[in-house]
Length: 109
Image 1 (cartoon, rainbow, N blue to C red):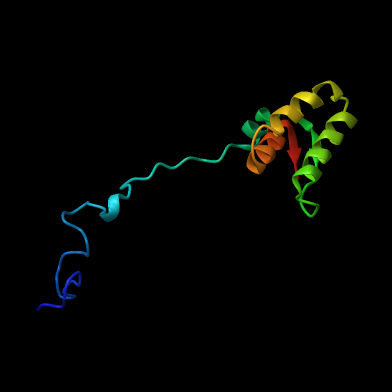
Image 2: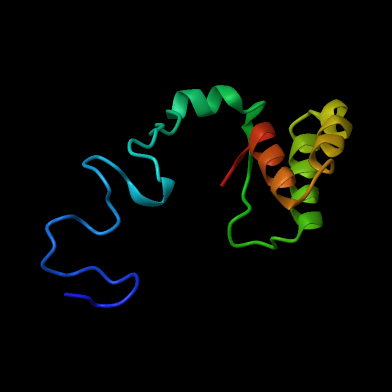
């Protein structure tokens, strides 16, 4: 039965778009790699100052507010000598760079 260009016969046994068993149409990965999220211990080791906790949820998400909150927390925790290094790293890219830098330096809640 001719249904038109690009339309398969619903009685056809072959799955749509599959030329051979095990073939995934559209170039998709047959077995995507899975990665496990880091354990709390691994995450804690990756944070430069895990004892410094900054609450960002529910507050102002403006980049300057985030930057100021982390700088203030570092200074208050006795890491004033590292604030300049943090600031340079945090402002070296876009908003995502700022957030990922903050998460590497302090514990974010």
